[in-house]
Image (cartoon, rainbow, N blue to C red):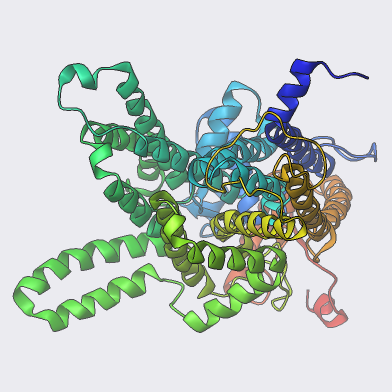
Length: 586
């Protein structure tokens, strides 16, 4: 079939965008299909089609409250039996205060997804993260293009489409982390656009000029998306606050006064729902569901006030003590640099070595050509290294064991989702290494090739010849073919890892979900609608269809409370297989 000249010209000019568009759609269909086949779909006609269950307690809480917010506009559940048993009747990731069950985690994903679902249906909630992730791929391309150029943006986004944690946590869609990362990418993109604006004008007519006033719109959007990502994971303010400040400091003349005010108004507007529901649920605009985090906020407020006083009146010794207290409060997981190194090696250097080492080589190449790098690129690198250090030390100092096997190093452990910004920030350095190494290889193969490619600029050659290492085109097609082969190999390794690479790969997760459907159906058939189930790990499976209590029978106080409930409603115990002596005890 003959291709029309205009069509051919269009394909040659926009082949990168066409490939990315196709793969982003494929990414959306793939992650959404995983959710469909693990949730709504069942080949067994006896299994309830409304089965929507999650692997972790956090996912369960986010889904239950997002659905409730979509349907009823509230973020709390009433359980009157908790008034009689000291609030023990609740799943993990829930807290109960005098019979009112509330989320423990951050409210952003609940408010955002619940509000969107209120316009459509609660059935869209599981699929919102794949939708946002696909949108994030578009803005990731746009952001990297603004910083490193079109070519780097294309290869970086191509690698991200297949990157295991991004796929994995888009498919496990009720965690906060992908949503947070996408909102951050969008916010950074609009912040970079603000940096493109001319210096703040002094005349009123210049301020109102349409060519300048569009940057007010970018300022509002940057503030709104920064605010949304903050309410999605408020704890990330530890490194987000310095990042925003440095971005402002490097663009202080271009930002001006009006754009900063508009940015702050957008930020406050986006965060106001969180303030409202924090006050409603937890009694303070700044407190959330985590008691430890609330204690940290109170400690920081009191210590900060005392620090000013001690610095003026009590000498520096007391001031240093208070600074140490602030550090220990911020790093409430502890500060253990050696352990952070070990965790970093496990969850980046070793787990994703095909990303890490080429990115390191890309960093070296970046440093060697330091005179040719733009200020924007150096700012990107500085902010990335600073933010990565904080993230690695902050979360790496603590032992997280999402897997029942504490020694298991798997993609499902918390570090891989907490460090999504670390992974995504390294990918442009990987792309830089791929681009420069393939260029050098092609120049070595045919020294007649003229090196016309610039990694940091956008070049659109309309007359590229589709011939390998063609001297007339500067070897454009040859370089791109070689790069495509490398990226396909990276994609193959990445897909294989996310599907089969650990005990929590997506295919294994899908099989477990199918087994859980049958388990859930059988237990619900054997228990009454008003019954309660005491369980250690199955609370996420049976709630909210059944009341649940997280516990065992090794605590006399808990046993006494079970006894009170057993007199008022059917009470069951469900756990993994038990030894004979445990059954005898029960």
